[in-house]
Length: 218
Image (cartoon, rainbow, N blue to C red; front, side, top):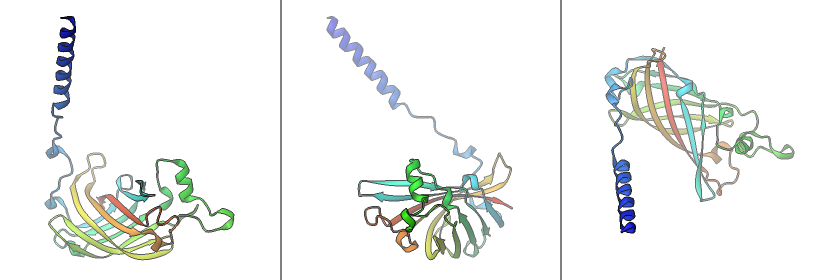
């Protein structure tokens, strides 16, 4: 009898826990957020990046086991935009390569260290020039999406790059009171085309870039 009661107690506890786990989380009230995916909120003009909230993430495959990723921050630049004519938009941004953030300090040192015994660095070197992207054409692909064609200069090499961009919100930033718009972008580059070919193909040549950009009206 004692054993049966114990099993019953365990079962009740398990059901109780399952009920807690199954309880739905409180939904976020997206309608209350300052930024909304509403193109009518966007006004024409010149915008500047919010460097603290504009990030370029990179992802590469490592030895075929896992992907490794990091982030470039402190991105500066400008966006000229007229919602009535999105194809005329112009984007010009600068990404400080030296601001790279990764999980392991040793790997950051590897990305930014000088080459051994005077050789070329494996990756960017200790004083890398900023990367620079300038749009050459914007092609709307939907109500809130567009392909941004442009030239990316990195490591002293300029190559054409396509960014698939999506409008993610517009409104007034409650902290800065600035009229703000946000975008997500994704691009793929071959790092060997920019002279960064160390360990290819063991560390993938293809690099996926995930971009989160916030711009404030000037």
